Amino acid sequence: PQRRDLDKTLMLCRQLYNAALQERRDAYKKAGRTVGFYEQKRYLPEIRAELPEYKHIHSQVLQNVIERVDLAFKGFFRRVKAGQKAGYPRFKGKGRYDSFTFPQAYETGVKLQDGGRRVLLYGIGSVKVKLHRPLEGKIKTATVKREGEHWYIIFITEVDPKPLPPSE
Image (tube, rainbow, N blue to C red):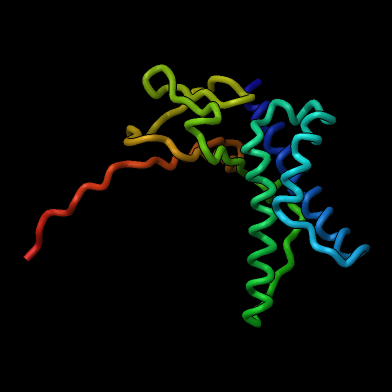
């Protein structure tokens, strides 16, 4: 059931990405206007209210999807301006969208449990995890990624800097 929930979350994030991309394309083609990050982000509460399947996905995960679309367009326009091969942002098929991110993991319901053997993910539940090394510091960001049939979670943590020993 957890694998099914992970697949469903990934599918809904991909659909939102493609819908946001389509909205930007249509707005420019039909009205000659651009739709920005904050304008699209403002519609997320309405989407969650009208489509019940999006209620089980944390709002910051959905905001991150919109941010990915925005970054794709920023990269496109940067390359156009630099005279490089631009590469217009693409729609993502099932095999081309493989992760979703909890940008503020410590606040959005990503918690280690059972001595680091499980991780609690918002909307999915407690998932068994194998940490290949103990986590140091405070968890800042968590990205859940699918590679083939396997699922991985990538943690970004904040640790206090340790000064290097003096060198001669």
